[in-house]
Length: 350
Image (tube, rainbow, N blue to C red; front, side):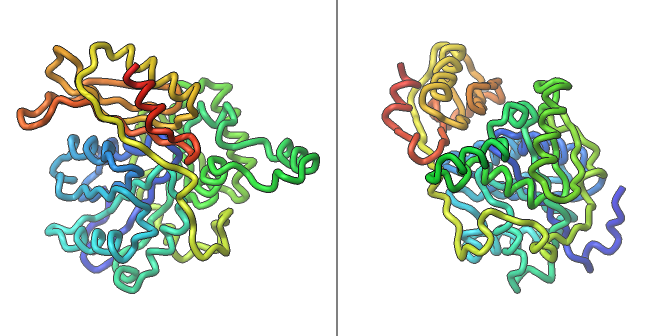
């Protein structure tokens, strides 16, 4: 049980939860909500794209220690780019709650660079009232083991020497590396899917990418003792210089590397056919992430769809409400040049 006796006099700790698309951030936060250990939690969800799936998932599991009004969603933009308009007012709103939260969790977009967000904590309006307790970077063990987001540095150097046109890493690897470099702790997720050899490979890749000692914890389905990851007391906003980034020295940072599109249509007949079409998007159209809801003909429940590449998960999450149109709505996210709304729609509606 945390010591909350001086909560009103001290800074409210904030944990930033970062990680690549589909690494398991929402699953982790859901676990923390249900295992708060006496903490009154508040959650800020920063979505990429206009369909707020993660926020809805978290709101559906709100409990007294983290009621629905303590869960705030910021869609369509990076919160570190809209500090004055979105981030500061949201933090002030949470700090004004009665009772005030003991701990705030920020789930960043899977495409976000965490270091610019850390800089936002230096804003005069909030810097005396909140502190970054820690930055948690989630990494999908199966994906990392396959080398999808952490390329072999030696091989890349060899390519660069042979081809002068190769002078930077891909946007995906830069995002991944910046998230690891900013972390106080790295959570290796989905270890059950990776297996022992995959976990060992992922650990080796992460160790090669992170230039300082950072604890790495393995977990499955977001289950971890909150005492291990909350209460780190890192004050990360005061330690920014020790967290290197590919974008250090930039006056601004771009989000044009990625784009999203929302596809809406009516009921579907067969969830298995939808899964096959999403797999086709990953394989043939380089779509990184698909998430949303589907209306299945003859079923009273809404189908939640979450896909990372060709790995698709789906489950019925709740009944359709009487005032809701039975529509299928999915958001697809990819690198900018691969988002062709017409082509994506054609595959999904084939």
